[in-house]
Image 1 (cartoon, rainbow, N blue to C red):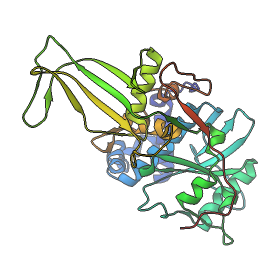
Image 2: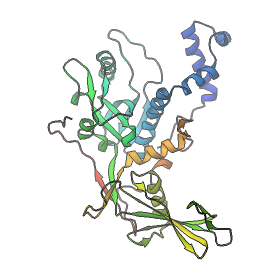
Image 3: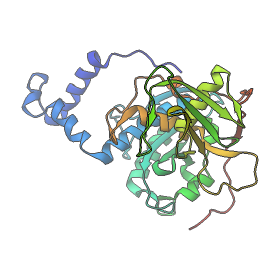
Image 4: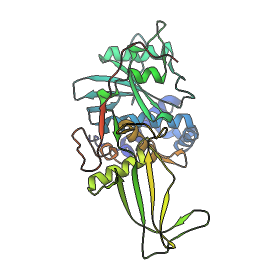
Length: 347
């Protein structure tokens, strides 16, 4: 997807000034009496909850664009709408899918203490969102990024609204009825382990210290799966992406020596948990989860959000494979995620 060209440094600044002027009832040439852009930004950056929440909103846009099923995404809450009658609130996004489906989406970020810790919507809050969606004629969805689980769920409001007009959304229920598959999300799997071999330059100093720290200059990376080297350049790029951004965990690096020199160090990645399971492949996680991992890596430094959006375009965050992918060595299984409307799982 391509972003419409816009110059925030030219138009965004005066639009912000106009809105701040209305808030403080000041003309544009007197805003500095009440407002400092630098101070306001500093206060926002120091609010961890605010920064992570706003970042998740921006991340949703990039994730949906990267999944490839949308033909239009707009920030619906970019301005304050005028309304008559019942109070309204614009949801975060309007999304038009290539299937013809159109939705409003409210986005939330959460770090639940357990998988049963809910995300809640109060009656007044939900009512404002629903009335806005009703007036504009498209269904309202709730998208939640479950941070520690590296998973997105996207749910229809009517599946979870209670009789008193509230929503209590737990991960186990949200995941069961998620329609993220309609947006292009899917589960990806391959044969474990995926191995990255980091080669030491033969013409530079190389050694293994007493504290098991290897000291060498990297000359090349190579990747292996099913005891075969991945030679195709595209598959190498996908393997690199999966090593960093899938849900698999890296095992302890193992150094291979050439006399007193480090020849290479191997890092194997596989699914956490029981390694004795008798199955051909293991889940790498969801595609949306991998894109989100890359997005967070691009916008975080020392566990602090330093950007809300990365400099890259959405297509550059995708892992490089689609529904038609057929690997020469790196085999992938891709599973469409469908909602289950059996009675909800309760914990």
